[in-house]
Length: 119
Image (tube, rainbow, N blue to C red; front, side, top):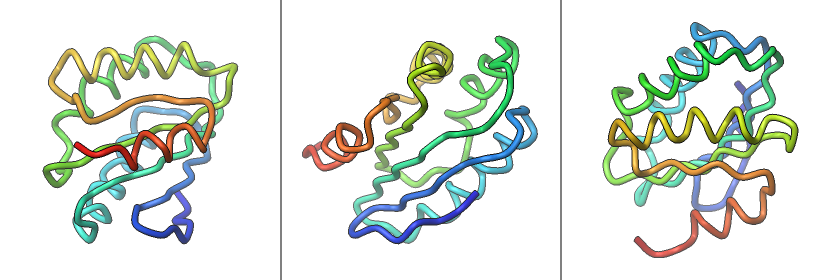
């Protein structure tokens, strides 16, 4: 995971192999860094490589609401167009488990606009 300078929000880029272990590690690191921001807004660009296995997508969606994020928080996840449906599946799993603070996008500018909206 790489942290990118940004004004007013935490911006990270996630790369590497798309495994549940790597995703949990990256999101735990994001949760730790996010506590320095008030209000907490996170732009996470997800460019991990892997087949987008359903079990990995389900598992990260299921674990997402249990991660130690500050509250309130808003997280915009940006992915490649080819991974959008996979990421939306993980988002739906997370939201169905109470993580109403996350949304998936394919466009960075749309994600930043969503982060800037008032609560």
